[in-house]
Length: 190
Image 1 (cartoon, rainbow, N blue to C red):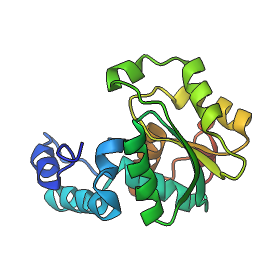
Image 2 (tube, rainbow, N blue to C red):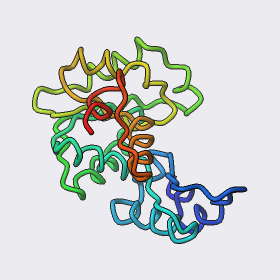
Image 3 (cartoon, rainbow, N blue to C red):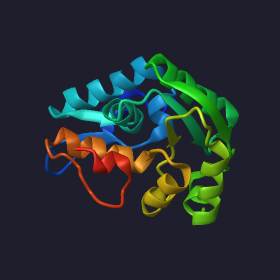
Image 4 (tube, helix red, strand yellow):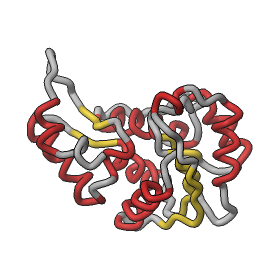
């Protein structure tokens, strides 16, 4: 994962037929395994290469938490516990406290893409904690968008997923406040 997120490798891969207005490195694990400074370096290199605002999924989680003024989270991780611990460390470097986490130790992104509503909901419920202000689900392969409203209703707190925070952050960077119904508290708060 660290190799995939190597800044020069990202820069070399950032080739587009038409220059975008904003870019985001839409990968959770590869954007946090280098730590907070490493994630900022990835975004800086991409932004410099393309001359546009750049971010990543991990940095988008931090921006979303700051937007909602939250700093205590629980973590519904699909990763192995060592990778989960790395994400907890990344959050801590940015001043976010993880009060509880679970690690599902999923075998692959392909397997995760097949997870159904019940399995994702069960992971979220297991990861929730009374002291957490929000629940984070850091995996772009999970199909969580259609579950956001139901998860937040069930847990009584914001649920921030990798895909949702990435899209929210990119929209915000475009200067278009991303307010959308049925996508949870993050998209309800201009």
